[in-house]
Image (cartoon, rainbow, N blue to C red):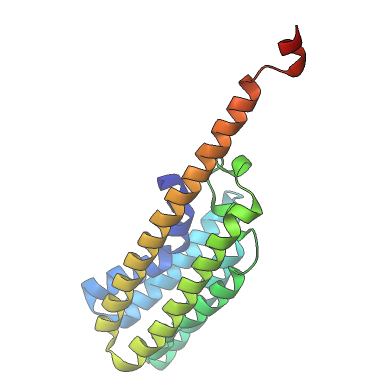
Length: 196
């Protein structure tokens, strides 16, 4: 389960850094600047190690840099507060592409999962992402930055962990079933062996 969650947590590194710093320092500019630095560092390390950098990660980094810089230069937190909605919309649309979940599946599971197994879950994740973006607009326009960050974080963490757990349990059952069927087929005697 941790192997499956790892890429998602890495993709969210700059957001996690931003929220932790905002809550601990109450300094929106500092939290934004270090969130940008964390995102740039994360992608730089991947590139140095010659690890693949997914489209979602590139989109997230671009939004962190552009919206974060706008908030720093204008000293207006609304840019950063609305950034998640833009990210959610872009990611939600990207998640409509069939097969995107295959990149996030653990290596051991990939041979047993087809596009048809993953597609409904990909669309479900897309729906949750778009819903999160709509909720963020309402929160950003009505709450101060600290309350906004706490509310969005709680909803984001709880909703994504719940959907992750349901997705994981469902796909794990599918993988086990497919693996057991493959092992049974390999152990079944062939027609020639049965006739002999």
